[in-house]
Length: 492
Image 1 (cartoon, rainbow, N blue to C red):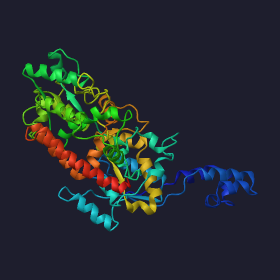
Image 2 (image 1 turned 60 degrees about the vertical axis):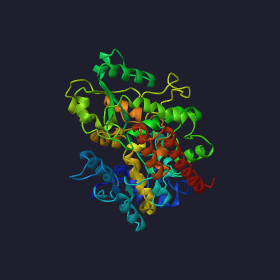
Image 3 (image 1 turned 180 degrees about the vertical axis):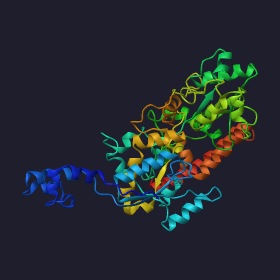
Image 4 (image 1 turned 90 degrees about the horizontal axis):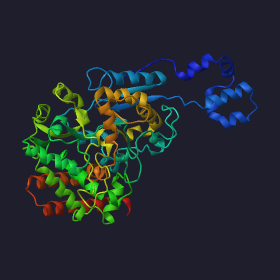
C-alpha cells in the first residue's frame, strides 16, 4: 500500500496567491464548485471573487478513496516483478492526490486457476478495481465496467489532449470492445511479434532482408540449398503457429474490408453472417496452403513444439530466421555477445503481395490487435462506485511521462503519443505492433472453443496429420456456431 500526506497542487496555488487567499475566506472553492462557475460569475461578486470562482471551476474535484490495482510488470514495492520506476511514479500520483490510497493486489500464484480466482471474487464483488487477469468473456458475464465515455474526454495528464483515446494508435483498444460497442479495459504499452534474422546468412546468399512473402520464400530456398536451416520458432500448439495462419488469412481477406481494418468481435460476427471469411473460400484455402509451403523450411521439431534450443541455435548461427517477440531483445543480445547485430525484418512479417497471391493487396497484417501483447488493465465492477477516481489513475498511468519509463524498464513498448528517444529496436517494435491485423482479436476473444479448434486444426494440418479439407471443415463449423450464438446476443 502506498500513501502520501504531501500538500496538493491546488493548495500550493492557494497559498501563493494572496488576493485569492483573501477571497477564499468569503467564497470557498467548495462553494464555487457547488454553485457552478456560471452561477458564481452571474452573481453579485467582487472582481476578485469572480476571478477566484473562474479559476476554481477549472480545477479537478478533490479525489478521495482507495484504488485496488493488479498488474504483473507494473507492481509497486519490494520483491515484485516490476522495477523501481512504478513505485516512483505511483508516489508522484499520490503526492498530487493526498486523499487517495493505492493498494497493490498480489497476482494469483502460478498454481492457482486464474479463471476460478476471478469468478469467485467477481461474484463476491471482491475483484481489484484494475486487473490484468480480466478477459473479453468476462464482459458478457458482467464482471467488467465500461470506460467508453471517459475515452472521449480529455486526459488532463497529457498537455493539449482533446480526447484520451486519440493519444493511442488507431484501433489499439479494439481487443477490449464488447458486443455493445463499449470499451472495458485500457492499455498503453505493447510488444511486437516479428521475425528476427541473421544478416550474415543473408549476405552469404547475396540477398537483402526480405521485404515481401515472395522474397522470404526465395531466401529460404537459397539458405536450404546452402545447408543452412532457414527458420525456427518456439512452441507448437497455438501461438506462434496459429499466428502464421492468422497472418496469411488476414492478408488475403484484407481487400474485402476498408484499408487498415482490425476487426473487433462484433465486426467479425457481422462479416461472418454476411458470408465473408468462410473457411471453404479460395482465399482461406490459399492462405493455409501458403503456410504449409513455408513449413518445409522450418527447423525439425518446430511444428511439434520441440524448441528448447531455439535461442542458442539462433545465437550460434544455426538458424537464419526466428519468430518471437520484442520482449526477447535483452535475452538475445546477451546470448549473441556481439557475434552479429540483433535485427528484425522491417515490417515484422513479410507482407503478402500479388507476386504470391491474386487476392493480396500488399496490406500489412503483421501484428494487429497490438494491445493483446501489452499490460492490459481491465476495469472491474468493483470500480463502479468510484469510477471517476479509478479512471483518473488510469489517465495518469497512460500518460507519456509515466508509461514511457515504466515500459522501457521492463522491455515493453510504450505507444502513447509523446514518448520520445526510443531505442531503435523498440521504435521499430512500436511501428510493427500497431499495424492492422484483421482476424487477431476475434481469434483470441470470440469464443474459447473457436481459439482451441483453430490451434488444433492449424497444427494438425501443418504437421500432416489432417487434410486441408478436414481442418477447414471442422473450423468452419465452430466458426458458424460461434457467430450465430454471438449474433443472437447482439440482436442480429
